[in-house]
Figure 1 (spheres, helix red, strand yellow):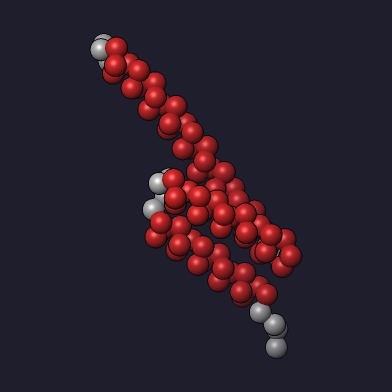
Figure 2 (figure 1 turned 60 degrees about the horizontal axis):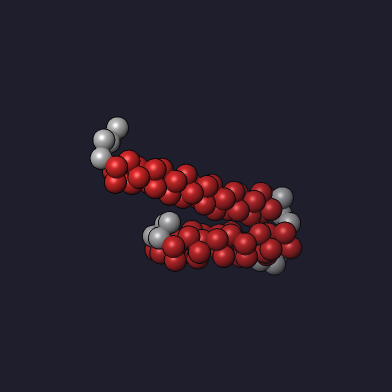
Length: 91
């Protein structure tokens, strides 16, 4: 535990930021899971709407530095691929 006043303040700030980032990441993962549930249920309309939410949250997380932009792009690509497989016409 720090003794210096500024270090004590910094510890409080760091803990607040950690909790906020954890909440943001959890929300991001939840939106991705909602999309994957819609895909598993073969509900194209729901999958499209949840994909938009997930992509928006991924972009926001990347712009805020919560995750790396390449990681966000990779996840978006994988989600899009799942939607394309789901909505592809069955021969």
